[in-house]
Length: 235
Ligand code: ADE
Image 1: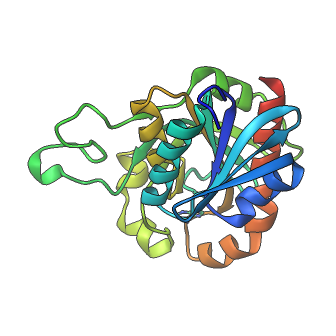
Image 2 (image 1 turned 180 degrees about the vertical axis):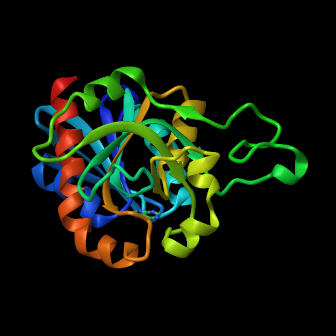
Image 3 (image 1 turned 90 degrees about the vertical axis):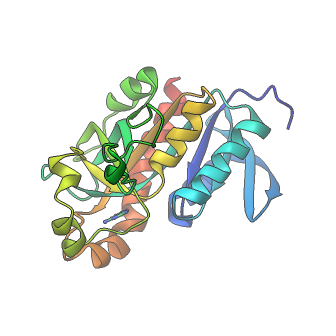
């Protein structure tokens, strides 16, 4: 596609998170790059490019940079699921990123605070105000939608992990935890592309997190799709 696209483009990490976007889009054309498929189509009257990154920060960063270089988006929205750190969050609720921090970036031994990219001022990556405000105003029947801090790292958090890492809430003040958001936030910020991460809760990063994740993923991912597609229609 030419550089003139300027749509709101979508990244998700798993099939369950991207499937509804593809199902509801029309006129899809696909382009393969590396091991990723970029889908260009129209969703509720908006031109969008959608891609499944796969899990983790590296894949997310790769597809995000490619998305920006190749498709020239006006903004990028990451849509998917997360584990809850804030006790007020229940399964199916949503967190709209106020900002993102990488919780597994730890160079404290050299005097950098947790999450800081050494020798830079980068630590907290703030989402786009306008996207955030619109998304926070969306209503989902019976579910909470709140703004919060997304923590990202290449670990799936269970009871043992979360207890060992008290700093997730005490120091980093995370509300939800996942595995891609901050990677997308970084690539977008460095390219001056506005971003938003929308995450719905599959589990509470506790002892039942693995079972809850598998059980609720297909249902809960739909809530994220509903919020993001509603956001697209409101912009
Ligand atoms: N995504 C959904 N649940 C998660 C968890 N408990 N840890 C990391 N990423 C997640």
